[in-house]
Length: 210
Image (cartoon, rainbow, N blue to C red; front, side, top):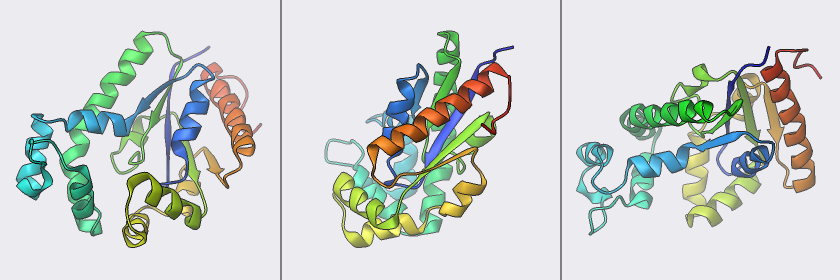
């Protein structure tokens, strides 16, 4: 008997998780981008933005009252304690919105909904998932990607990496563990394998050891 499932997609920052999400979408799955939800939830005038200002001060705002995301990141990723404070402040509302999106996708007839969430475990969304996929990559590659993507220094990139969970953690807590070495064709093969496992989970037939 077929059943609808939630797939958690997570991993280390700069590992290429968004590429995996785009490839999985090609197999007919709904993809929910947690980062996009977070940006929406912290738009100018939102209740969550007000909470962030209460926690971190007016210095995290631009002159027009919108969130200065780079400044917030500088503060929030300065230490594990600050990162934890950011998570405690933002996760409840972001998780609520993600779950609402998931239900909407199921209502639309999707059999698998991919939650693309770097904070899958930290937000406890992992407990709602039937299947978890993690993407990791060599540290040097990740640092390069983060610096280019976010326009930050080497020191800032290394700091962000240092406060994340280890590759070993993701390996032990995932159904599929993808190592992205930069070879796109090889990555697509991993995604195809992952899609087959997701189909097995949906169908309820066979096992994941294929």
